[in-house]
Length: 342
Ligand code: AR6
Image (cartoon, rainbow, N blue to C red; front, side):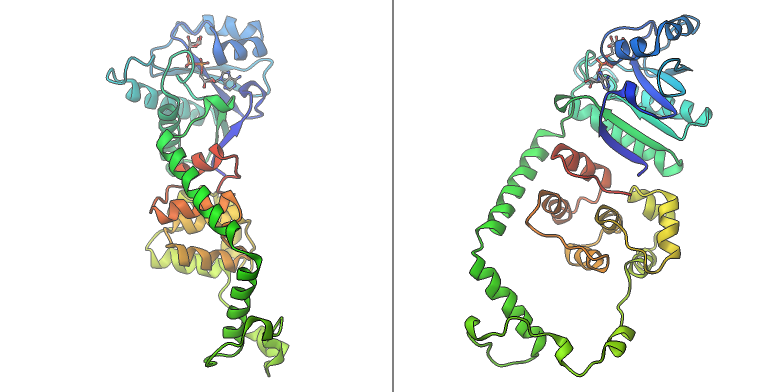
């Protein structure tokens, strides 16, 4: 998955480069800066002293010494002063400069903290949005795995309104799914099976009279014949939809937050069985309406139900026409669910 949000201490990340939320002196400080310097050891400070500081909105790179990464990229975020003093542009520039440095040094994996969202006071939901937007824009043109590392739950907030809307949607749908009586559900299942087995039947009999499992196997189709009528596979539907939407493969897998290698596997193996988050990520990237998204999932052997939060959150976004995988992932993360992508 090219962009991932994880909960961790950034000094523990096993990546090529970690990014530090530094100040313009580059000589250390509190917050994540303090932790990085403590974990890297004194040599980091000695190297930083040779750099001559750094402007707000920019970044400089050093070795990582005792840290598990190879490099530390020291980015200087803006202090929040109400939002009308170019804070956003400077924060965007921090991410862009850091990513450009990481690329220049051949890094394949990079981890960012939420720059400026601590001591510098940038509102956390807005800081997260800037991070996600800027990194995902970079990933459209570049192959890299980028982690946004969130230290604690408080440090991570999606917009309050979105959080409240999704909570309400989950509540409503959970309630619906769980207030159905067992009898109601059985009755509906039986009705469906009956329609399936006896097309055009005038009146279904009372629930008690329905045989428990009317199977199509009872009909005349032999197993061999049935096997020649295999439906379009997940991979075939995916490739067909990409063509129908006029997208390139790369546009699709990047929008889905899926890496190129995995996409190639799916492309070359007609019977490839993706994980559920991967299948959904493609349905989202293709902007499929709910019924088609469900159809595509079914091809991979999955369904969207109202019995778990993950499914309801996905449905919420599809119903609201929001097909931004990264925003969906922010919400999934906020509700402690697995993220979309590989
Ligand atoms: N791992 C990941 N994230 C962390 C960690 C950690 N170990 N520790 C804190 N965070 P901050 P800023 C999160 O204050 O706002 C320093 O003194 C934290 O929860 O470290 O850019 C510098 O020298 C928050 O979400 O950086 C500057 O003077 C995010 O990292 C000033 O602070 C950034 O919080 C920079 O302030």
